[in-house]
Image (cartoon, rainbow, N blue to C red; front, top):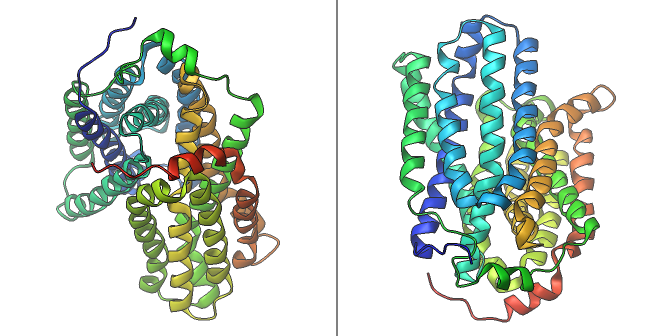
Length: 399
């Protein structure tokens, strides 16, 4: 029998909140300071783009390498260590002055971020089992909250002309310090009173094709999310001739709606089931992006982007939960595949849309993410609707 910790679920949930919010905060602070880093390293946009691809590639490798380690050692050990490594790596880029040294450091930053992405989601699934009701979407909402705080604090320190290296060093050390605190409250996978033998007996082997369908759905939804992140403002400005301030509201309405939606998703999933959250959410997202693409007025387009954010808000958390519960014995490896495919979609979406604009208007290129949302509606059955009906019939427990 493996060691069973006595950390209460609420303490473990709070630790998971810290993991998600600090990851979002660290990434946000990095993104806010990218223009300064580009200036200090003295590279053109094209070289910086290649360096960011290095970061993304390292993150994908980190996900696949760490997934099996999560299964072997448990997410409660890997996730805080990954956040600590991410924080320590983040202290370096702000001091660099050459592109090659930045590239080397970004390999470490990306690998640690990928490791953290898989391990903290795996730990979130473990904590969610202790509550016996959906709580995953709230963790993802905390990631968004962390990014929002990074935008506010980053703007303040940039306005005060604080040195980039100092800001990122303080940010990274703060993440590493809190990671050490969070490690005391994380939870073992067998905390809920199950021995290793019991877990193995109850776990059913995951159908080989099912994990790839879940990964494909994550790819589709995160590609659509990436399109909103990078192209919403440009679409409003280029198609509707919106001002710069009006155009910024496109992404703003999407991001706010997605964050609010994630805070509400857990309650909705508990009532109607994860499959319906993904299916109807993707349908709402398709309608919202279609409205944004064809709207003749900026206010109507903003409504479309808000619907798009609401629709996408709950899908990815449900997919990650489903992947983590396919087989408890290999949850980390399975989640690494689904999270990795989703990450590929997030990275590829903006580039694919950019390529399509060579042949069609930007709003017409939005047909691709709309189609992917429609396909998500069709394949949402992969989240196991029978289990959803059974869970939806159970009364909700209060936190």
